[in-house]
View 1 (tube, rainbow, N blue to C red):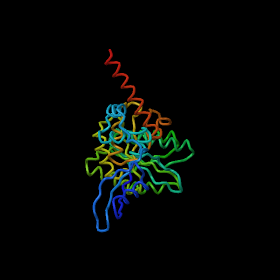
View 2: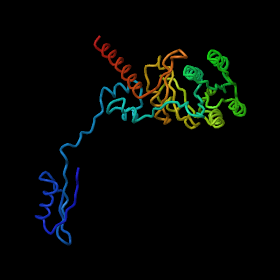
View 3: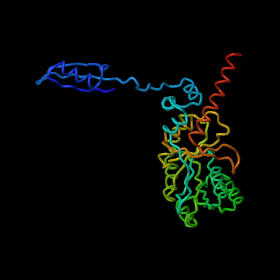
View 4: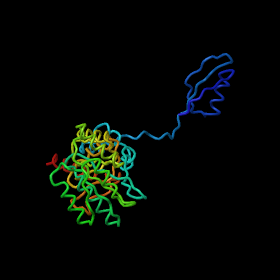
Length: 305
């Protein structure tokens, strides 16, 4: 839309200027007398103005089935799903390159899959010819150290146990130049301020980036609350687990949105060597569409039966 103001000695002169500049399709919105003549307001609405895209009803049904919160679903209902996901949410990857890559601390609620995620990342690095430093700070859960130790032995790595910031600081002195560092944090209730502060303190001691490990399939509101709480402890990234078992992914989307977390990896199988893949907009769009469409077909069949 082009809106313009014209001044001239008289109405005829002002109209001639409008037609000459805006053409015969220009609309006159108003005229008024001024000290030196008349003032005329004209507007031209172009014929080729693109239509405003409308929400896709099928997309809305699919997002509702996944349990995506209404506010977020409204943002995702228009446009190609992959592109819209990439615009609305954040996607990235872990960076273990460089002379001194930043340590990565895996945090999350108990049972989220942190230890297995550490083992999977370590396996990926070893298979690429890189020897990471593996540290566990989980001194609470029975068998936690033994579970991770079993993985590190298979990989030919040494597991360091450091349950407190002071011992964690000493453990980091054993890091070889350029070696990535993976830190397995204890399962945490982020709504307990003392536990939340513990995670933040470990990350601060190690100068580590913190990734929240969160299972898919949780209630969206609960996931959003967890993500916000862990974000307050310094989490900036998100690893989704159990995507091989969860059909509804609204909880992961709600968590990424509420905590402003960058989606990085997805646990998609039971294996340590092949159970982790990049969580990209394309992968997520495919999973959302496939499971949502399958459920829609099932509902249609039930209604026709």
